[in-house]
Image (tube, rainbow, N blue to C red):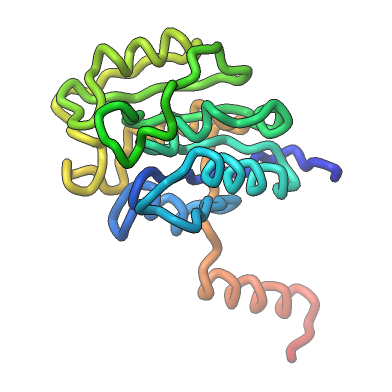
Length: 205
């Protein structure tokens, strides 16, 4: 497969998926070149199934990917095989989970401690409910990631008041080669484009 230059933004939700109003959902709706990873079972995750689904999604893209992962999705990213890792241009890893704190997540332990092969940013909250800030910092050191500590931000999700999440948008932009995010075209945009084309050619349907 020949790769294009513009990276895809790959949304990688965590345990139980990310619902309406979550920053991952809003980004998938608002920004172009965005693909959302789907899992067959969001409630009873297994490492093999989640990593295989994530890997297939990455390898199916016609461009490198920049990851935007949350919670358990961060751990799935770190378990990827080399052929999928080679297609990652950068990763924003938000509120990574501690799989030893919940039995439902135990299959993702032990968490890989090797350095990631791509630029990455770990974002964690000082009062994260599912992973102590010290552990999140250790993840970042082991993975060779930039570490961003956010005070009193909970799980950095809808429940903690994070919708569009401007800080996350800025961090994602820093990982994109072109430094920006293109909005998704709307139906109105498409109609306007068609009108402009007709006017420029002197033709109409």
